Image (cartoon, rainbow, N blue to C red; front, side):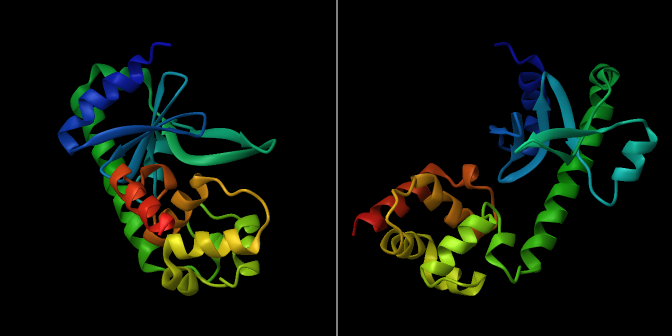
Length: 197
């Protein structure tokens, strides 16, 4: 399937740094280093909004992307850009740079405010929180002390079911404050080596 918007966006935004794409929300998230700032769904580019630029984007008639999660609509912070913006690369770059700045700022604010519950960490849900509590890990601080490998081993001991490696990446992401899909391959390899010890 051809994805011109994804290819064009990656090429255009390359001046921001190392741009990567990952499967997200039924489309592809665009990351600069480890920060997601744009989304391409159905060949439409969406830019990240925050307190600084959301009102401005809405005034221009832009709407946020909505996807379904377990049958319920979830409104994202990613706004679809008008196709006319592609004809003005300078404007598109400026808007994308704003989106990147907003995403970086949001991320640093999130990491400064440490959540009190496990389910509030990246990648973790209520079910994961319950599993971790059963394994004796009841807070973000305890998870931090155990580390991803220690927590994964504790989960393996406490639960009879087979655990996926995605859970290991999710725990690492929860500790480091990022989505599990952007845990670098080198770090994944290190985690696997520690797991086998």
